[in-house]
Each structure stands twice: as C-alpha cells, then as structure tokens.
Length: 445
Image (spheres, rainbow, N blue to C red):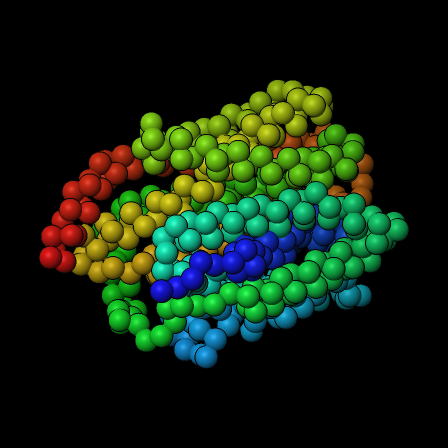
C-alpha cells in the first residue's frame, strides 16, 4: 500500500509547472517586443523567426512522447527529465534574451536558433509533467489533488512573469533594456533550475517498472487519427485558443506603450490574467448544466466579448482593465476544457479504429497546439504591424497605432469567435460518448 503523499511531494510536483510557466511564458509574452524594441530586429523579420521556429518546434511533441515512453532509468520514466533538461532549459532561456553585437543577418540567425532550441527543451520538460501523474500515486484522489496543485503552480509562474518582468527589467537595467532583460532572464532561469531540481528530488514514481501494455507501433499511432473527427475539432479549436491568447499577451506591451502612453499598464494587465483561475473554478459547475462542448463555446464567447468591449472603451484604463478581466475569465475556461476533452477523443479513436493511442493523440492535442498557436500568435500581429508602418522607438503614425489596436483587440476576438464556431460541430460526437464507453467496456469483457 502506498502512503499518502506529503505536502512536500505535492509542492514538488506543482513546482514543475511553476518553473515551466515562469520561463516559457516569459519567452512567449516578451520575446517579440524584445526582438523589435531591444535587440533591434525588424518587426517583420521577428515575426518570421517566431513562425519558422514554432512550425519546426511543433513537430517535436509526438517525438518527445515516444522518447519518454521508451525511457528506462533508475530514476523512473518521466522524473529524470526534470533533472536532465533543467540546466539546458535555464541556459537557453537566458541566451534567448541576450543582445550580442551582431550584424542584422547574424541577429536573425542567433534569435532563430536560441528561440527554437528553448522551445524544443520546454517540450521535453512539459511532456513528462503530464505523463508522470499516473506514476506518482495509485490513489485517484491523490492524483486529483496533485493536478489541482499543478494548475495553481502554473498560474503562479505565469503571474510572476506577467506582473514583474518589465519592472525587473527597469530595475536591473537602469535605463538599459538589453542589460535589464538579460539579468531578468538569468534570475528567472536560476529560479526555474532550482525548482526543477526540487521537483526531481522530491517526487517519486511508483509505477515505473516494466509496463504491462506494450507500446504500439508508430504507424498505428497515426491510424488512430483516421476518421477521428472529434479529435480534429478539439485540435483546431485549441490552436485557435492559443493563437488568440498569444496575440493578446504579445501585443499588450505595444498597446500600453504606444496607444495608451503608459508602458507600466502592460504589467498591470498581465497581472490581471490571474483571473483565469476564476474560469478554472467555474468549470465544474458549468459542466453540470452544459455539455463539455457547450462549456468550451461559452468560454470562447466570453473571451471574445471581453475583447470586443475593450474596443469601445477608448483609453479609460479602468474600463480596459475590467474588460481584460472579463476576457481572462473566458480564457480560463477555454484553456482548460480541451485538455479535459482529449481523453474522450482517445476513446473515440479506439472505438472507431481499434487503436488506443493516448500519448500520441494527447501530445499533438496539447503541445502541438500550444506551439503552433503561439508561433502564429507572434507572426500574425508582427506582419500586421509591419504593414501598418510600425517602427520601434519612433512616434507611431495613425496607421501604425491602428495596426497595433487591431492586433491587440480585434484579432484575438476573431480567433476566439472562430474557436467557438469550430466547436459547434462537436455536439453530434459528444452525444455518442455514453454509447462509446459502453461499447469499449463490452469489447474488454
């Protein structure tokens, strides 16, 4: 019999997502601004770098899933990756925010390489955060508790970077943003490194011995996608969420500095993203009255409405903040539901094709969507702003300000509305879930 996990064990697991979000959200939220206004890369080139890196990086999610599935060490299957990748993750996150004296072409190459490698390493850490959960405890209640603490830890990591990055850049840099970003990234990296080591030291896999279920061939994993339309719908909707959310978080700094005239507003708005927790809390109550698909549609709709409201309140920061909070509640619902629904699509794939490929389908449905959505979320606004005439450190033209406003307010609203529209087609598959589960049980018996 396994003893109950201690608070230390639980906090160690939660620290994995705290570290991951602290470092990765620093990268996704501030890298576009860093490239254009600090490192000196043109906005168009910066967007292209983000897109190319994310397209390449998005392909590594199933690869990491296969690597972890075939990991056998004295430390376990998933747990050792917290140790093995902690230092590389910290080093490359810091390198991503350095500003070496290079030519324009060399800066582009340096940015692409460091950004790409950092993203690949992040996938290597984030994938075992999910895969280790069943091996941390055999008690279902303990697993629920662990996952809840993990979500809280992730929100804390994001809250820290969203709220304190720009003030720390100003503090450490003393007017030199290149120095400020470098030191801030280094401080975050050290914190993340220590958290990953703490997670490795204080977690223990209880089911890391030989697996009773053999890994299925890679070609069969691809067959699990065949005709799996509910999975396709969730993947597309999840990409639209990460696209819309990345656009709003990566352009808020431009909108605050140039359209509102107060750079510090960006930190205040980013800190209010913590209201996503309210959306997370509402989900158990919502799914009692609505289906999971309907709940996700409601989340998308709230997020879209909040963005639209921001477009009509002018420069009144109090009203902007209120609309931002409203949007954040919607994104809190929209970010959580796809992860809860992916397991249903795994059941559908097994029911339809006779192949249960949980790791492969969920890896693409989560990590791939995050990478692809965040890559497009950096690329699209950069191209819009470039076409509108944005130039860093200059008095922006009316056209450039309009481009920033469209990217910050209307583009996320459009993405969230598309996500809601995609989910309208999900209901016909969701109605089959009870029968699918019954059929699968009969096959086993």
